[in-house]
Length: 108
Image (cartoon, rainbow, N blue to C red; front, side, top):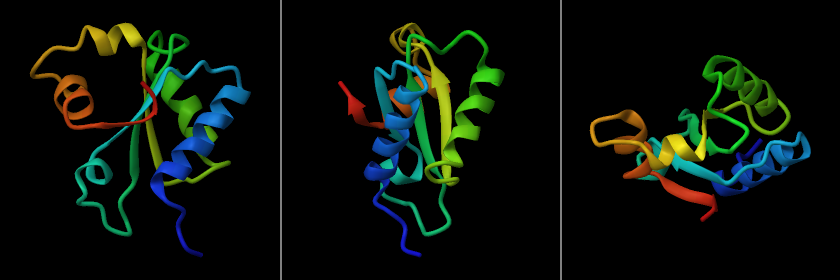
């Protein structure tokens, strides 16, 4: 089966999250897909920015990953709050890999 375009997969995933009452402010594609170096075995790294996230990274990460089973199991979501993104500093993974090199595919 052919894989759907990454942006479409993320849009479907965001819609599923919204149906589950997760207020998604942004979805930021990062990693190999954002850098244009992905191959057929690459996962889809996506940061989910929501005011409903950022309190318990482990539990939120598990919840987000479980929901990928309904869309595409190659999705690899990471939960962040808007405050974490706004307060990210140079030298951190969030700032250097997601904020600086990532590509917003949902939200502004």
